[in-house]
Amino acid sequence: MKQFTKYVFILALIVMMYQTKAQDVNQNSFTLQQAVEYAMKNSPSVVNANNDIVAAKYRKKEIAGIGYPQINASFDLKDFFKIPVQVIPNFVSPAVYQGIVSATTPQGQTPVYDPEKLSPDGYPPLAAAFGTKYQAGLSASISQIIFSSDYIVALQAAKYLELMGTINATRSKADVVAGVSKAYYTVLVNKERLVLLNSNLDRLKKLLDDTKTYNQQGFVELIDVERLEVTYNNLLTEKERAIRLMTLGDAALRFQMGYTGTAELTLTDVLPESIEEQELSLAKVDPSKRPEYQLLQSTHELNILNLKRQKLAYLPSLVAYGNGGYNAFRSEFDIFQTGKEWYPTLVIGATLSLKIFDGFQRHYKVQQAKLEINKGQQNLIQIQQVVNIETSTAVANLNNAIISLKAQTRNKELAMHVQEVAQKKYLGGVGSNIEVITAETSLKEAQTNYYNSVYDLLVAKIDYQKATGALVK
Image (cartoon, rainbow, N blue to C red; front, top):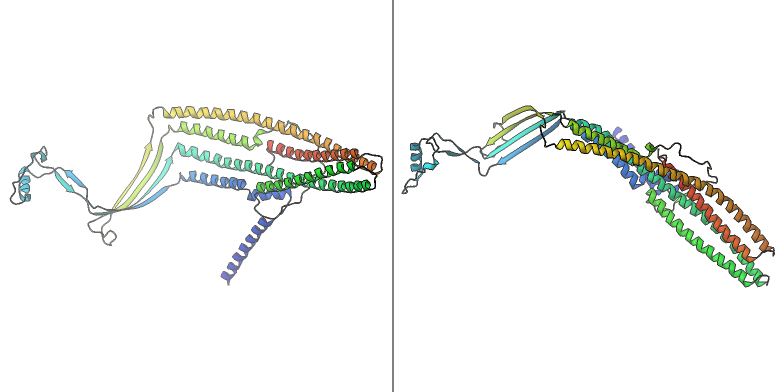
């Protein structure tokens, strides 16, 4: 019964996970925050950055593993088709040697004695095959680092490698947040622009229909109708362009989010009605908050550790080891037959290594490491200058965007008022058709400029947050 309950629980958990994943894939309604959170889970660049963090942690553990005992085992099996021959000094006298030659000479042939085959003491060398046809060996070894400067420095460097993975992930996330936010705002602006275009088209269509009626009644000329029709057609073209921009903006947002669903995206946020008008300054610019600065700082620390490693390389290294095993020698292939002899072997020891002279290689490596440290310091100075320039630009753009939006908001209100007055005058018979068309054109231009200013301000705020390192915390 308990086993059955366990299986039911696991099955329910799998179903819940599947449903959660399905909801995540099929979700199509997003606020800006939800769009960013979705991108944090599904954007390939963020997923890869998170994988890099995990990989850096594994790399750190891999380096730490070098200091653990290293244990290996092996089994070796040999079949000698030809047993190796060894030539050894022989104690056989020349007389005996001659007798052996005579005895081994085929009948009917004259024995041939070769004095050159005799050793200096008068005895001929003996060629003999040592060993057996089959040999087997089973061995195990263990080694342990007692002291190694490279290992000590590698452990210190590993934490910086892990830190750099985290910094890279932060930078990738900042890029994704900026990309998603800009794409989201692009869709919102185009959406609002399309709403206004439809409103303008409805108003202009009514005016055009009324003007056609007045023309049929003889109150206005045909040219008035044609002017309005040209304006109306231009506005239709503007609407088609806005629709295409909506499609492109939707595709860009899907790409930035890593959204693979086919459902139409619904954005639930709206453009802010009021924008913060407080101007910013450069009084509190902190370059250390930028991922680029943090990466260069970590690289500089690694260069310092590299110099330390090169200097410590003059120290000796000490490694302890042990090796043990069994060997078997057989004339027949009965290696694994019980009762046969296996010969044990065991050795323990330690190796102390010290480099006495390496042709000044280490000296020049130290000099190179010092130059890399100097380069790192210059890079840090340069990135501070770059951050200051980028932040100054972002602040200027944001302040200009605030001023521009205030002006364009006022212009839109004025243009709307002028359009209303011009239309009332025209319908009342005291205004001209050209005045109405001019007012409509000015209103459309003012509305376009207003939404461009809104978008520029939103983008400027994102760029400012990114420049100051505040986009992702």
